[in-house]
Length: 161
Image 1 (cartoon, one colour):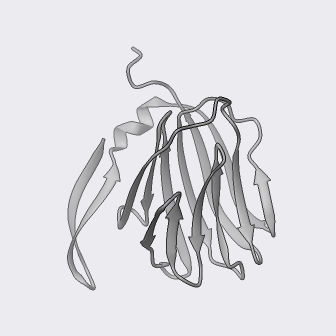
Image 2: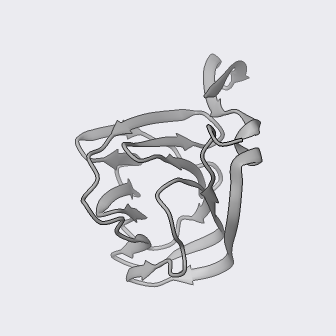
Image 3: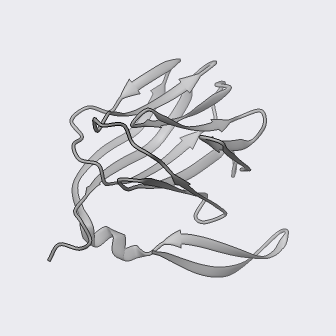
């Protein structure tokens, strides 16, 4: 579930969409990384179990050409030059804010919902996951990227009581 708000921006009044704060109530185990320089390549985020996640990240745009996540083999890519976010066959313009981007990804069994810069961008993606749960990784291509903060929250089912 998402909360819709109207906000005044330099481009006028815009509609923003963000996950409701009650998502925090179903956080189980949390994994945190802060102020790491991600060099060229992939970094598998080990020790993470399950298939429901709330991923929150703030990246500093370094000299990389692109960076992002691989979730169960599905790439979520920020192209620095194009200033564009892509996942599977969908792309959307996505501007940096003072050299940074913030992402929140809600990962369910059959979907990845991507929220950028506190609701400026919303990209829901339907996915058919592979049989195995696969891994989570963060990556940088063509240079390095600063990971200011990265939180991966394993989620409990919202239907369990």
